[in-house]
Length: 348
Image (cartoon, rainbow, N blue to C red):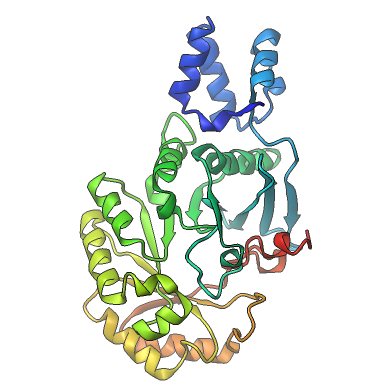
């Protein structure tokens, strides 16, 4: 069975080829095709000898044998693609286009163990972690898609399927390749990791001096409300979450962003707004309000637009930096909380 090329670090690939007797400059040519020119077919690497290209193709794959499906929004501002992995599992990723920014929403797990009630991925349950190569592969494919328009991915958000910090070691290995200047070269300031609040692994980021932007999935200002939609809160309540986030803020030297999925009748009351204001008092954080995107969970409804604006105004008037974020990709079920829902139901 062919091995996934991206499951090997560039250093490991180099050692394999050196042991095979390849010259260093040939290895550099190969890595340049992969990381700088966004080519995902060995046969397209024209300055490599035919014998080397054939050997690479016999032993490695950059994508899985079944081609990914691709769905593009009518206005062209988002693209969702899904991979069928070697074991038959499906993951999805999304490209979001905005002005000169090309953002890739990356998945880190097949399914998710955290059980957030507003998320389609959670309904899959936890199936398995993605390997570092399966994470990196999503970026390689996205860049290859953008070649024709002479574009590349400029920003990464780990906001796809799964909780990246629960797949910590593979996430870290993928991060090194994504951000390494000699590889994909996407700076850490352009990489955001969303987390429901896996506190021990936020601490690991500090202990291992890993600087990325954090986006905390908060979604409520009371433990009772948050536990109802995010079971992880039973293990790590809001007070502990805020204390750990403050530590990371001091470590990184910049405020952390909080995400608040707004659900009608669940967390959109004036009392909820007042509690948020109190929670953020004296805290240098930014709040992104994300109106619930369509999902199949019964009983969860997106608030009306005028009430979304009213909730945001309450927060703003209370002195909190707040933005209403309309998620891109809704038309293709590629927005926050929607990934893999249709794939599981056989609608794609």
